[in-house]
Image (cartoon, rainbow, N blue to C red; front, side):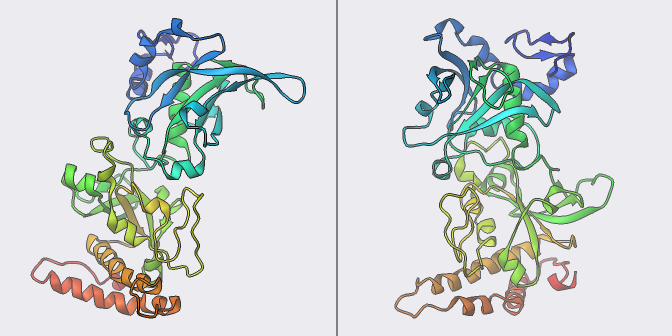
Length: 395
């Protein structure tokens, strides 16, 4: 997709321009999600001259839609005029929408000629919303870890690149490409997709890690619960990650990162379930408090943070020291995290009328010694199996 003078328009939508066929083929997985819809949209149905073409990303549909968005002219405090785009009809009256301007595409490395806005609900609404399937269809076109977009989203266009744009305009398929790249590049940049350990790794040093597969990958793709994978030592998991408080306390610090869902099951929220990953992220900070307005916020002592509670999906795990990590090591760690959950519960009064344990007492019991006991119990249960796995602390 380019702005070269020799570029030709897509023969169907006649909106996106391509310099040659490979350029068009590269854009097709994303472009096809809206091309036919955009082409069939009746431009003559414009309600008034203050309605402009916009792109709506519904929660429960795998494809975006083209809609009319009203932009009435209003007076500002300095005597000027601007068009106010009425996005509230797509979010509800109790929402304070957030508007993200796009004026530069970091993937194409080019400045836009006009501004595009991506608008979604406020944080409190997003936290109560379901994953956005139409955006997931876009992020699924590229491998890597992407932001978990939730709730309805709408994109609209304005004229110019000034700090304040006064006039609205019709959005087009070139804008759609920029919006798609915004979704792909927001927050987490695309990463290397872990290869199975049985596959030939690329050149360079690799780190042995484990993928904790969610219900979707296990049930639909027949993957094991704990899968050995290899990732490059330069993978973004070593710079952009989460950690496990429990693993830290027992002397096996790890990095974790959620994996993008496979599009073959991504429409079913039930298939994102991954209780192993949820238990792995229980909070051991006795001063942690509930943060209701944060997308990644803490749920408090003894609980996994919000992003590890719902729609978790499969999760990549590596050791912070980049030493080899085996599926049995992670299975033992997840089993141990489940075993210590009642300790947190006891400290929160779940075993009334017993006097709750102190948080310090709970932390004292989450240690290397109790993990080792759990490790030997697990390996004992697997007696007879081929367990050519080193002791976790001897790696």
